Amino acid sequence: MLPHAEATEELAERLGDLNDLAVFRATLATLDLPASERTTVEARITTLKARHQLAAFPLGARLFVEHPNDLARRWGRLWDIWRA
Image 1: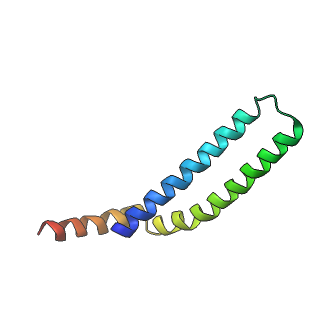
Image 2: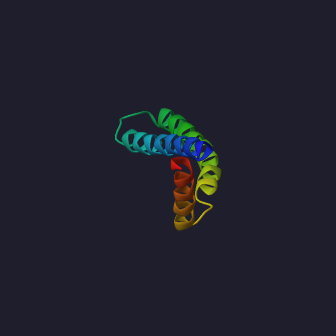
């Protein structure tokens, strides 16, 4: 379960970073900046967003490869073994 927990934590971090970038982009739209500065920051946001998405997609695929019911059953069996 540890690899699953670690992947979950990393995915949560990536998704949190993506949310931060979305909020930053929305805030940027409200600021009075020269067009050249806005363009530079927008480009950096786009680059960072792509980087986080590329890292997040494989993590999500790995975490959600099992049907939720199958995952719950497997974890239940592991829990039972641990308690025995």
